[in-house]
Length: 154
Figure 1 (cartoon, rainbow, N blue to C red):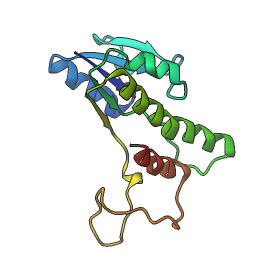
Figure 2 (cartoon, helix red, strand yellow):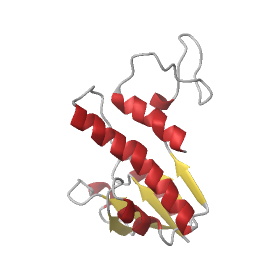
Figure 3 (cartoon, one colour):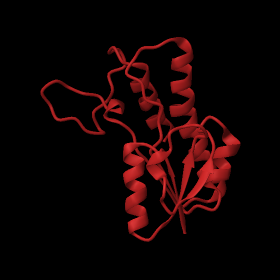
Figure 4 (cartoon, rainbow, N blue to C red):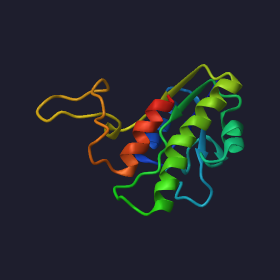
């Protein structure tokens, strides 16, 4: 049984990989060539290289896996320029779509998609959770908007 983890070079993904290894799981990690992948250095994992924006590399990464943990995301706290907004959308929204479709096509048993509090709405003075709707007319950063859209893909 192999488990794929996207975003393994990030904080959440790197800790998840270590936990899965501790639990005796066979782990495959999707890494981007040329990125800082030091978080998985020295770990007994299968490394595959690809990009969430590339459907064929996602299908190849998912193939043969029973479980997928999707922790990868392009993060930004800026409004940015149109090309940055496009990259956020392509990575976070289309990448999630491609991953979910690949999981269906290749027979993955379970996909866990991690998101962000940015995907939830909020009401001042009230606790928020995944049932708190996003108010569509609020000022929202492009990153947050992509996380909302990625939730819709799920």
